[in-house]
Every structure is written in structure tokens, then in C-alpha cells.
Image (cartoon, rainbow, N blue to C red):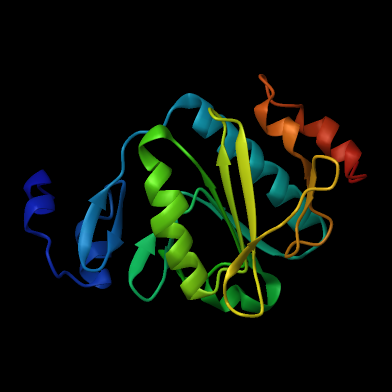
Length: 199
């Protein structure tokens, strides 16, 4: 696959994208290939921490499946690569070999400086329109976290914190003290699992 393909990819289908860019870190939006930039170590640390915690909780309670980038989520107009996503047990038929067909129940995006607009505007609109039930935007550098729940009107509503604690609407038993996300190093996984009474 030649790098020059980025300049000539107008109008390609999602299937063509999967075939031609299977080894490239990129997303597909309205027929266009959007290259992704490398992520910072802090971004990856938070992403991995959330992935492991969520996966342990979901597997312990047999709630569904947790996947992380570079697995894609195919939506009507895009093939996005969420940092972390959860698919509920009753929707596991959506998990295909190379992507998830349709919206995940929970999507988590960890913001990098270059992805602020993409995550807070573009992806928020796409995820809302596609029916992603819960969307988290985590900014480790700015120490900001937004938790959105899809309302009955199909629009995202901010989920309020209770004394600095977020409780997931979609994943039973999932809650976080938001301050955990900003700690360096991040809290021990075992500490969180004990708080959740899983060990």
C-alpha cells in the first residue's frame, strides 16, 4: 500500500478502505481516509487503564464485550476508531472480524491536543446521530471529563457527577472518581477493583 493513496482516496467505500488500509492507523469519513497521528504516552496510559478496568468488570459480570483501538466502529457515514468501546451482551452479533457494525453502547475517547475538535464536535455529532448510548470525553492534559447520555429525544445530555463520582448509565456497576483519571501514576488496578468489590 502506497502512502500516496491518501491523496487519491476520494469516494472509496468502507469495504475498499478496510482492504487498502488494513495496516494503516486511519479512520474513514464520508468516503475519505483520515490519517491518525501517533498518541502521547499519557493518552495511551489512560486508555489502557480504562480498557483493563472496564474489561475486568464486564467479563466478571458477563455484560458483553470491551474492545479498544484500532478496532473500528462502522457508522452510517464513518468508520471510527474509538479508544475504548463496550458492546452489550444482547448486541454481540454486531462484532465482526474487522469492525463493529453499528453503534457501541459506550464509547470512550481520550483527547489529545490535535483531536479536540474531532472528539468534542465531529465525533460527538456522529455518535449522537448513530445512537451511541453513552459517550465519555476524557482530557488528561486539561483534566476535564465529560460524560454524555443519550436522552429520549436522541440528543446527548451531560451526566452530572455526585460528589466528584460518575456512575455509568449503560454499564451496571461501573463508577469512577473523576480525580483518579488525573493521578500520576494512575491508581493501581487492584485498588479500583477492591473499591468495586470485585476482589
